[in-house]
Length: 236
Ligand code: BMP
Image (tube, rainbow, N blue to C red; front, side, top):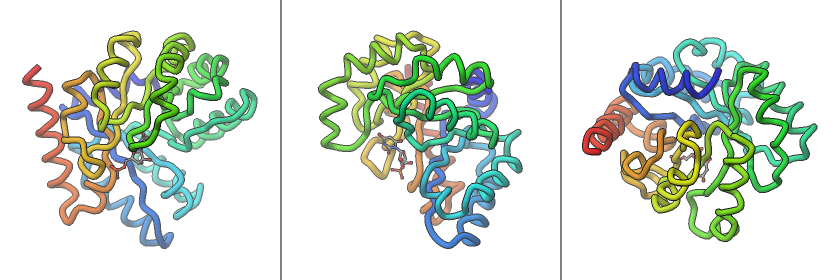
């Protein structure tokens, strides 16, 4: 499924919110918590990012079951931040797409995804490259941003990740990427960025984890984030 489908879901639900489902802990608890969250958040969340935490907690079969159950409601993004040689990247993406993931996050810095992007499109899946991480001290990304940006644009990734904590880089990425290359911004609330702020700087989606799945009322938290996003987009 292409990111155009994610944008259609965004328009349908009036939301730019992607849930980082980073549950870690006992298998049965994490499986039932994941199912509970996805069953209550459908009005506000458009995509679900799954990576090492949930996969290590509930296993591949557990992840497969969740994707199968919710594939019509959410866009599923595999976040294992792949960074390998081209043939391993392709083989890994094929397995993830066979599991039902619609997009896969890869690192850009190994510069090994030239062939992966068209390969993934042939599988009807999208590739999202990590352009700028949200944490302080990601200086290698800062020093090499221009090279990574040119690479991301040149290979035609469908999207990039840029930390919501670093809005000036979101602005720069928006200026330098093609308009159909979408920007995903993690780092909202718990890492310091305000909900909706990244969108004002040109991000297309916000990725939020703990502020929702650790909230005493996850639905209320998701609703408030989406309301802030709507205001941010309305003010533009
Ligand atoms: P939280 O909202 O709980 O801080 O989670 C952020 C999510 O975004 C995590 O899944 C993390 O792996 C991811 N992420 C990030 O925080 N910064 C980045 O630069 C890249 C990420 O993928």
